[in-house]
View 1 (cartoon, helix red, strand yellow):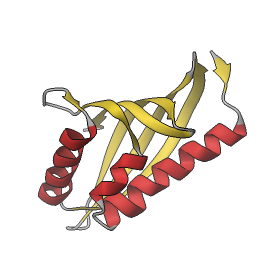
View 2: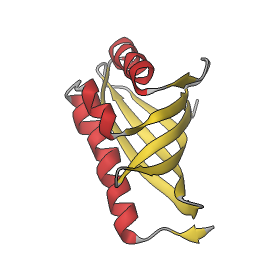
View 3: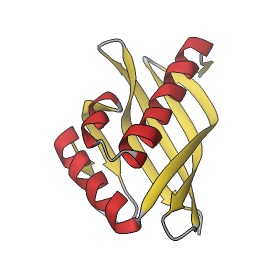
Length: 128
């Protein structure tokens, strides 16, 4: 695997920030179109795999509301080019409405779609 150019890392940070600010904080689920590829898959903990933006939007709408998530700070721990995409290992701190912080670890396979870097495969689980 090769190192990730700074321009790509910057685009990844922008997408991660968009997820936090637009999707989680502002509850703008349509912004997931600029976060996930059209045929993306998510593999949430304790649940079946979910594919496609509409199904992913439905998942996140329910998850954000039921967990009371008010922000999601995503931090890249490691990222490497892998073929035409990027493989990222990261951690997230989910701030909940009740004041608790939930630690998460994740792996994202990034793919470029129409010139934008987006999440193509997304898997995570809590640290506890």
